[in-house]
Length: 90
Image (cartoon, rainbow, N blue to C red; front, side, top):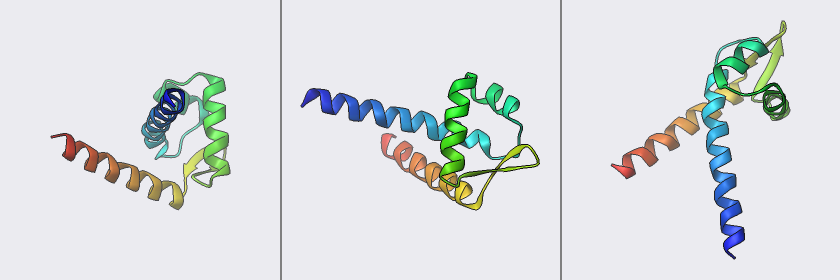
């Protein structure tokens, strides 16, 4: 039982870090710039970009990654949730 809880907590923390980094993808950027801004190594960045594009949150236009409408909605909801949790902590 404790192992399941620990793995769920670790997964939530990973999702939280991922969502925070996704906010850096808001503007159109090349892969190298994204890597520097998010402090990810190349393999981590490739994994994230593959996931984000497969989910329709990012698209590739003229060799730059661009946030889609769905991606902007994700960011809005993430920030709304973050504000709710922050307000409850105060």
